[in-house]
Image 1 (tube, rainbow, N blue to C red):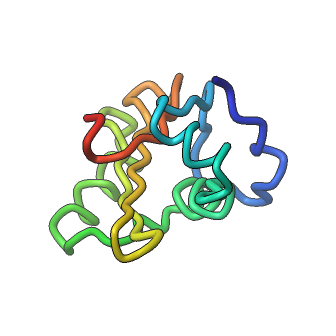
Image 2 (cartoon, rainbow, N blue to C red):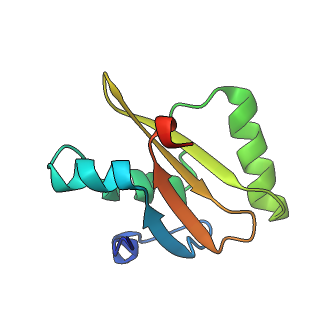
Length: 101
């Protein structure tokens, strides 16, 4: 399912491409348990969320080179994490739950 929130991003650092979400994320959105828009904005602005310093550096290098995927992890609730992955060619950004990887 496509997610039409790109217009909410004022200064993205990279193109999102086609934004999609998995079945699990879609179910949480439909239940009102997750609004993915702020997390997508953070991802596109280069705020990688709850990553360690090594993973942050890998993302920063991938952002500069354009040769690797970009990954973010956000703790939405104590029992809920949201992952966002943008493919290396910036053609697709996927919102998913860790259990769906």
